[in-house]
Length: 87
Image (cartoon, rainbow, N blue to C red; front, top):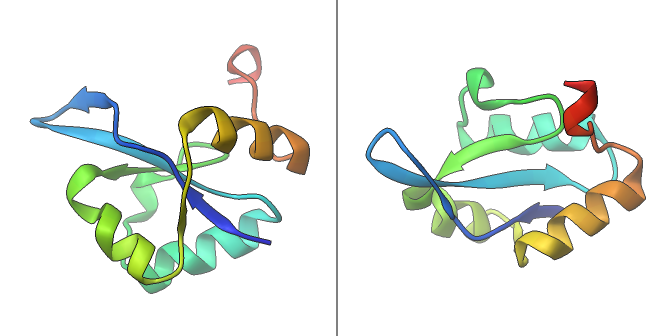
């Protein structure tokens, strides 16, 4: 069971954004997000969008940095992935 964060690659609102996911459960993801002080509005069905400036804080709290492809692979394997067609 791990919390994963990918590299910030998506520009918006004057910064770049990354994704924060759990490879085990949404409960684990939400608990981690609360500990990290992430706003609930950052949750998007299977991940939190997080600004680049928060990555180091998230890693210090225990998030595992992974490439985007690895994050998606592990999210799919967990069964938690919400596919774009289902959004």
